[in-house]
Length: 262
Image (cartoon, rainbow, N blue to C red; front, side, top):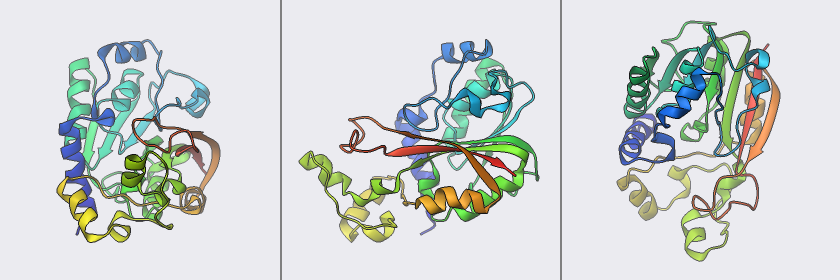
C-alpha cells in the first residue's frame, strides 16, 4: 500500500468530516492578526513562544514562510494576515482548499502546493526564512528525507519549528485504554499501525479511513534535525485533552522544537 496516497485520502476524508485541525478559525482571529495580535500552535494547547519568530516580533512582513502539513484554514491565514509570504504545502487537497478559501475571503495571497513533505522538489534551494510544521510527521515512515529537504529549502539562519508526538504515546492500546478507562500497554517501539495491529483491527481502521501512523524516537526527531544541519535552540512539552486520550495528564504526549539552520 502506498502510505502517502492512503494518508492523503484519509486526511481529505477527515477534513470533509471536520475535526479540530480542519476547522478554519473565526474571522476575528485573522482581524487581530492584521493588527499584529496573534499566536499559533504546533501542539494542542501551548502557544509557540514569540521569541522563536524572526526578531521576536509579531510583524512578519517580508518573511518567507513554508507552512508544512499545516493546512486547514488556521495558521496559514494568520501568518499571511501578519504580513508573511506564505506557501502552504500539504498532502491533503481539502486542507489546502480551506487555506485558499479563507485567504481569498480575507483578500490575502498565498501559494498552495499539494505533495509529500518528504519531497519538496518543487521548491527552490534556500527560499524560506521559516518552516512551520505542526504535529504531522507521525504520518511519515522515515523522517530523514523530511529533515534534509527542510534544510535544503531554508536559508542559512532560517528556523524550523516542529510539533511531534512523544514516542511513549505509541506503546499503549488506545482503543482498549478508552474502553477500560485506564492505560493499557500493548506495543513496543518503534511502532507503526501497519506492523503492530492485527489483521482485523487494521482492516477496521483502513475501512474507517483513519490515517496510518508511525512512532519516531527522540533520536530520529531531535538527533535527525541535528544530523541534517540544524541546531535545536528551543523545546517545550504539551498535553492534549481528556476527550482525545485517556493518557492526558499522565505525561506530556507532545513536544515542539525550534531549530536553526547552521
